[in-house]
Length: 115
Image 1 (cartoon, rainbow, N blue to C red):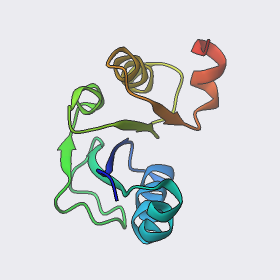
Image 2 (image 1 turned 180 degrees about the vertical axis):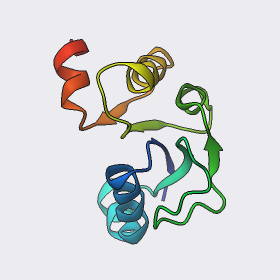
Image 3 (image 1 turned 60 degrees about the vertical axis):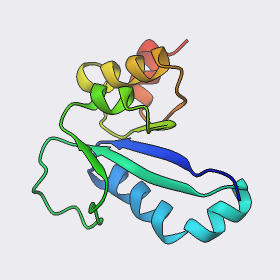
Image 4 (image 1 turned 45 degrees about the vertical axis):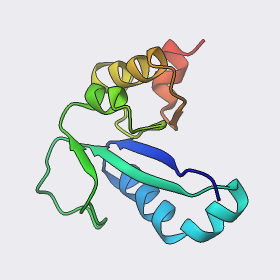
C-alpha cells in the first residue's frame, strides 16, 4: 500500500472527535477503499486537557489552527471549528494558500465565503 494520507483535524468537539474516532475505528475499510491508509496525525483545539473521548496520544497538537494548516506533515485539513469568521476562516484560508485540500461541513463559512 502507498504512503498514508495524513489528516489534520481542527476542532475537537462532537464533529471533530467523531471524525477522528470514525477514521480510527474504520481504518482498515477506509484504507482498502482509498488504496492507502488515512491517518490522523495532528489536531487543534483550545483546551488540551479536556476529555474528548478520542485518543490523542502520539498526535501533534496545535493550539493555533493556522499552525496546523502550515504543518508539512498534514496532507488534508478537516475544519470542524464552526462559524463563518475567526479561526475557522483563518484555518481554511491558510490551508488553501498552502495548497492543501480542506474538508468541512461548515455551511455558514461556505455560504458567506465560498467561491
